[in-house]
Length: 549
Image 1 (cartoon, rainbow, N blue to C red):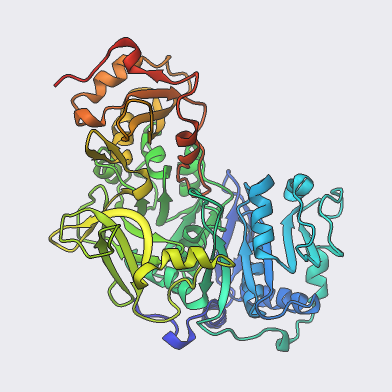
Image 2 (image 1 turned 90 degrees about the vertical axis):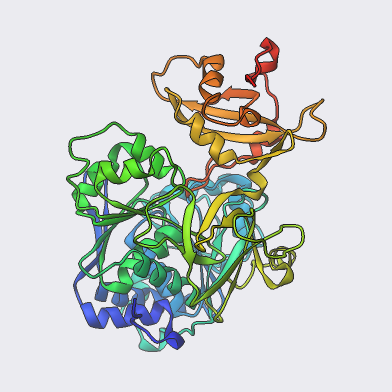
C-alpha cells in the first residue's frame, strides 16, 4: 500500500492532520453499545479539532515533551482524543488495562510515573487499595456521567472533570500543538505480564504507524471498508491494527466496549463491517457458537484470526463466507509476518516476512544460530529501518538487554520456516512441554481437548512431579460449557487416543470455572503451573489407566 505520508513524517499526528484535510467531516469512528446504538462518533476533522483542544488543556496543566499521560479509559472517543492530544504535546501516552486491580495496577502506575491521569469514573474505586504515594501525579481527570459525583478515592493535587478539561482548552492555541518526529517515543504499552511483572514497551511514532500501514496493506483495506473492533484500545491490535489501520486509508471503524461471543454476530451485522480481527480464544469461540441463518448475511469479507486450528480454519471461512488471514507479531516487534492473500488457510502458518522493514530468523534458543528449514527454534526479529521498532522497556534496562541478546530481539516464541519461506508458529517456548524425551506443543493438545463434547476451552501445562525423572507430566485445565454433564475423565482420555501421540495424552485433568486470561484473550498459564496438583486434580494413574501402545 502507498503510504499517505513520506517515511520521514510517519507520525500519528501527521496522519491525523493529513486525513482531516482530506476527509473533513466524514465519519471515522463510531462507538457502539450491544444493540448497535451509537454512543459517540468522531469525524476525521473532529478528531484533529478535539485533540487540539485537549492538547491545549494539557499544555495548561504543564504537560511537556516526554511527560507521561496515563489513561485508564474504556473504548471511547475520549480514549482516541486523549492519545492524539498527548502526542501533540510530544508527551508519552500510557494506556492501561481497564481490568487491572491491586498490585497489577499499582505496578504500572508506579512504573510509568504519570504527570496526568485520566480515569473513567467507574474505575476510580480500583485505587482504594492501591498505594501510589510518591509517584508524582499532579492532575487527575475524571471521565464519565457521574464524574463530579463519585467520592474521591484517588488523591491528586488537582482534580477536574473531562468537561472542565475541555473547557480549559477552549479556544485552542495553535502553539500548544507540537509536531512530533517519527523517532519520538510516544506510547508506553504494557505487556501482558504472563511470565513476570508487566513491561512497559517504548513505542516510537513510526513504529505505531507501521502497525497500521502493514495491516492496511495485508488486509487490502480501502476507504470503502468498515472495520469492526471488539478488542480493547489499550492493546496494539485494537488501537493500531484496527482503528488506526482504518484511519490511514480513510475507512470507517465501529468500536464496541468488549468482545462477546453471544453478541458478536448481531454487532457485526449492525455495524455493516466488512473486516474484523479476532485474537486468542476469540475466533474459536466465534466458530463454536451455535450456527445462525444469518452467518453468511454479514458484509464481512476478511477476518484476521490468530491463531487458527486445523479443526475449524477452513470451516470458519465456509460458514461465514470470509477469507481468513493470519500473521505474527508482538507489541515490541510490530507485525513482521503476514500471510499471503492467495495461500490457503493453514493452522499455525503465519506467512512470509515483510522484508522491506524486517529481518526474521528461526534460531537455536541456546546459541542464537539460524536453523535450517523445518527445524523448530525461537523467532528472532530485528528492524531494517530506524524507529519502526520498539526502543526497549521503560525503566527495565536489564529486561531490554536480555531481550536484545546478540542484536536480535528474542520473541520467546517457537516456530519453523517451511521450504517456501513461510513461518509456522508452534508455541510459546515456555509453554512447550518436555515429556518422555519428546517436545509437546500445549497448543496442539488444547485443540484436541477443545473438540471433546462439552468442553468450552482448555489450557495444557507441564508440571514437575516426583518420579518423572526431571521431565514433566501434562496437566490440562478445562472449562465446561454451561449445562454440560459432569466430565467423564476416562472417556476424554479415550477420545484423545486416536487424535494425539501417546506421549501427549495428559495425565492430570482439572475442571475449573474459568481460565485466567490477558485482555487480548491469551491464557495465562503460570498460575496453573505454580499450583501443581490440587485437591481437585484428577490423576489417571490413580485408576491405572494408560494409553494403548
